Amino acid sequence: MKIYKVKNYEELSRKAANIIAAQVIMKPDCVLGLATGSSPIGTYDNLTAMYESGDLDFSQVTTVNLDEYKGLDASNDQSYRYFMNKHLFSRINIPMEHTYVPDGTVADSDEACAAYNETLHKAGPADLQLLGLGHDGHIGFNEPADHFADETHCVDLTEVTIQANKRFFASEADVPRQAYTMGVGTIMRAKTVLVIVSGEDKAEILNQVINGPVTPQVPASILQFHSNAIIVADEAALSKTDL
Ligand code: F6R
Image (cartoon, rainbow, N blue to C red; front, side):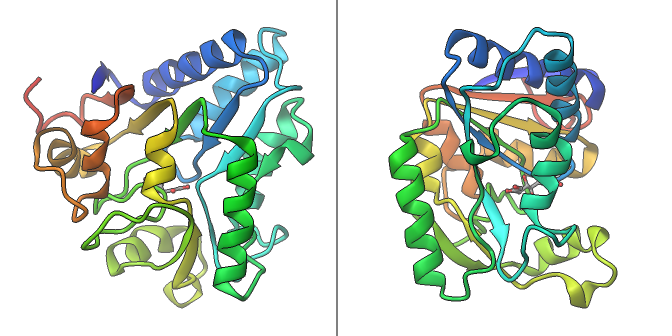
């Protein structure tokens, strides 16, 4: 794993956006795997600024997002589709029909996951997959488990994740208990994986991801086996890791 240590969230966001920008410039019709949450917001702001200054063109890019809450539709401001439209897609020149997020409104999990797998197969492996890191080591919504899931599946969110994500909802009871997520196998087939991690609260788990054993109990640890995994983390997030 290649690890870039940066000062703070602002620097992290600039560095991550530069790496993604390089990908888009090198291959204008690339497939970008994207993430939601707090970590990538600054990255998306920087990408938007590069688009606005005329340095980036997204007209040929395809995006595939990691996950979506089961039961939420695009008009729900807590849905990941809403998040992506707000923080990135509506601000750049990507055609909306090139942007894919699992469909949270499909009640039948098998049907929803099969449909998203078909989308992912058609798009092909992501050229670059952006990831945040959960406090329990999750990537996408691949929670600690006894095995690594290969493709898109429906997951029960863990208590740690529900507690971490309730800040976005009116109350804890409103946090959906299930989500559709891309599998670890699909993430591992991305040609480049870019993980962004910020803050002291992620320091312990980030150290396990980098230096601990590869185990489905810490899903992101499998990235140790990826041939082109890049971690951009700030000083606080790397405060428990010897580099
Ligand atoms: C989001 C996702 C999650 C987050 C992770 C970190 O699409 O798949 O794995 O990346 O929960 O979230 P933040 O960035 O909010 O700390």
